[in-house]
Length: 548
Image (cartoon, rainbow, N blue to C red):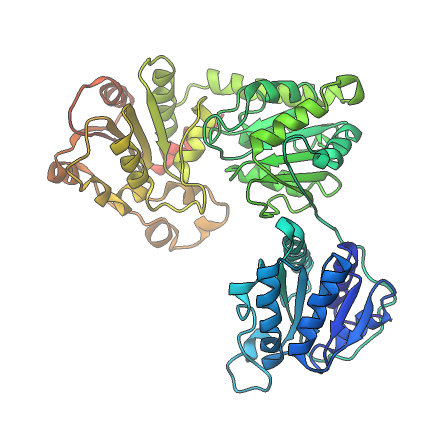
């Protein structure tokens, strides 16, 4: 029988799945459930060593002899610090080993309770990955723990190997052992994409086995992926992207398309390859997270393992463009890949329908209408424009109307710094730079206009509806009396005085006719100083402008 602590059973199952066959165990009460599991698990051999300092070196020596990772399990408190010399040595020698420390519940750290100290960061400087497992047993806690353990155990094996640390907080009672079997746990496989190596064999094999494939492209710099390779894969897979990359064709409006296709079981992909950075669309991410049976692979240059769609099964450490090209070459013989053609057609038809609605919708005066007009004019413009969109509503409008690459701070999605980033870009870029920003982002970052070195190649389209307009579209928030005043930060600020202060050319518009004139001036005027057009709307107008 295994421990009554689900997280201990989860950890044990994943150690087995990742090929850890040996564990050096030290005495203690807090780690007793973990040691018990190792002892009764037939796939793990236990080796008892009383001194933690010695135990760490025992584990390192075993890993050297076996050629794969070995676990060393210690109790809470100062016991963890005893393995530090071995961890440092293993770090310099690139020896794979996993330090597993039992811990007291977080609420008791620093409360003069026995055997407690801040353990999660104790080895941080010397390990490749340090994780502390969550103290919750619900579905999200289970997924979180699975992701963290997979992250640590794959990090232990990458780049020649090295030590990692898994901290396991455990509540009392500790000593119940009534679970008959270990759970089946998702193991994330990690491979490295190197030119001329067979490392993508598993990825390409699972690609061939699938019938309804999807490639999701997140934020990437221009030119990251070859269009020819992407076009080749599009004959076998649905290609989904947003304005944050320069991919061509495919599904370019996932936010709207998923609303048409979400309930169609014949349109659900069975294989998802995710490359690049952030995806903006929340509805699309929710849709993919609901596909519990799909095979999901992630490509990441630095080998990190964000489980964005919650069901990751494989990780490729490599450049997205390289992996896409290698996969396209490996699956070039289309007769080897049995593709569900009606599945591809469903997504293509949905994209065509959304594109038709956008083109024929008589958008009333709103931020959407102004951005739509801007993007129409940009499509006819010959100048070298680099387009920056701020976060929140602005980037979502870009995804609807922009058919070119846009820059956006989607690393952490904050409203700060969007204007400063565009201004910095303009200082060193010879062509013109346009920043489309909402009012809160602009006023938060108004000091971006301070440097006198800014020139006329910087243009700013300021969408001012007097608040954080996106909050008016969050279901349920309208019930709070604080929603408009405090949460959405309603205001009556205008950029006119700011522009006067810094010598920035200023225009304003309160209707569509003047908005068109302001946009035309931004795109065509030859000013030597930056230009700003402030477009005034209301949240009600903006909500009406989004109804396709």
